[in-house]
Image (tube, rainbow over the protein chains, first blue to last red):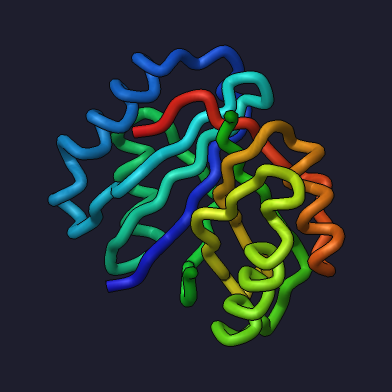
Length: 82
Length: 82
């Protein structure tokens, strides 16, 4: 199982409630791909969302995000953290 | 106190030990600006490091990173998280 950070752009003015809804939409279907979304951070001013997840591959994470309605192609595999 | 995510680019091939050293360099001087670096995640393949911090301003976080030897101008203020 690998760890990933993905980045969404263009999410200007997203509210905390919308972030919760988007995260819930991921959680609802994440088991289909063996993915788990751990945390997400929002900057609505710059339109950025960062999501930390675990899963078998970048593609699996991206498929869940896409099916949940917020696709992104910007995803990084995390091999170390402090 | 606000929360921030900053992004470093071009850190290709950085090792976990180098990530630790960089994080330690931040921790050593972060009190000077009332900043605290909570976590950092590394993708050495794509050369990315993501740092989560708290502090009084983006500029305070950026000053610590710069003095520690790894400046970045890409920083986002986090107003919501899940």
